[in-house]
Image (cartoon, rainbow over all chains, first blue to last red; front, side, top):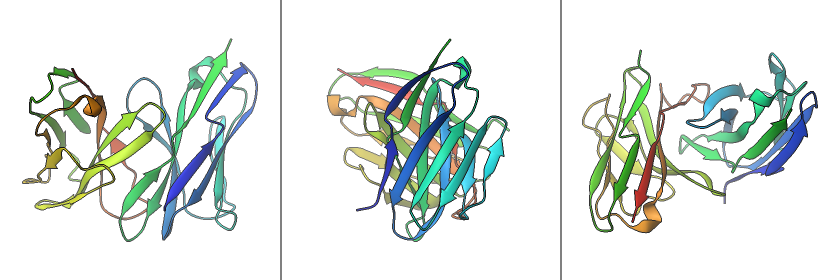
Length: 111
Length: 114
């Protein structure tokens, strides 16, 4: 069965901390991996990763993919209260052309 | 572009009632999908469409129907609402089946079935 597993499921940190969110996957015919941020409404796109070892970076957020070990990490440095959200990992599956979603990691950043 | 729009934002139904959740996109995207999101379950695919006139079942299709008569619109119909269908529903679209295409989500519809 295809699955995407995120860890931890929830995390509470203080402003200024650095966090690492994990996403492992077992998906047949992997094509790409996506990270989303969901605050109160719909998920918004953060990154798409297709190649191993190439870091994607946007401000304080960065992500990398390891296709050999079948995982990705999302790093957030110098966290701010505005980073509080659910971070969702999804894998695009070729053939079915569908996204397989993880359950998300709920990040809470306290002042 | 308005992106992906959904109506209504909130809806309360009684068990057995039927209704249609509307979804539209103005980006000329071929792929459209419906998801439901429940606490602790993540996003689960209900139905999806790879183009006008083509639909297929996702992970949790029972109790829902879809149609895709135009590229822009992808309504989701609940035939006879049940309390188990209480959830937040998201419509999404992407340009094609290319794995490098970004998927865009609508703002969601919060449905409560009493």
